[in-house]
Image (cartoon, rainbow, N blue to C red):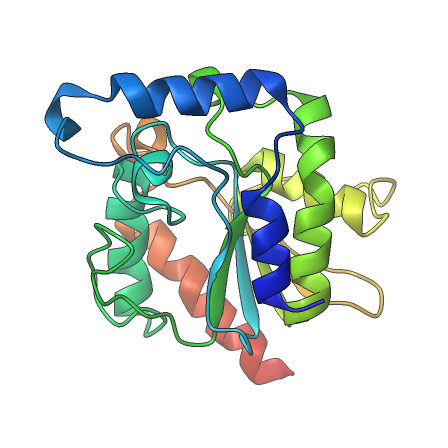
Length: 221
């Protein structure tokens, strides 16, 4: 399967009635600051460099971020913290990510998530994540990354499930590094949500260290 065909399948998905209803409702009601936007209101596919060695896995689109812009981490507070760090580390062509046509390109990196539709209160259910899991599995098969970066505990646990490593005793912690048997490295980071960045749980220095570690792991291959 190609990324183009996979993305077509992702865009057509309506398997989760709760998420379909929510994403479309948000796209109609909008937020006052974005009333002039034509909201995306659909599942959000991954994006980036197809031959990437690094795959970043987040949680799910934000209601007024990716669900508005149609691109992962674009147009919300998490992206405002993520992309400057990726630019400093040389993975992103620019520090800003505001729309699908803003000129941003990723180098040696592909960004995706365990959920493709904006969930109410940013909390997808286990069943909804199970429905989305095959999309992430196909992306991993196509990209074949050398390093996986899990942004948050939910992404970490979902990747363990995919790789059958849930019994390894691995624990999520910021900066923790593991390696799947005959597979890629797995590097953990706190999610760059405003809840984490505005409280100081995740600082710019801590986040920069994650991407420096990614470079170190790539050089070890």
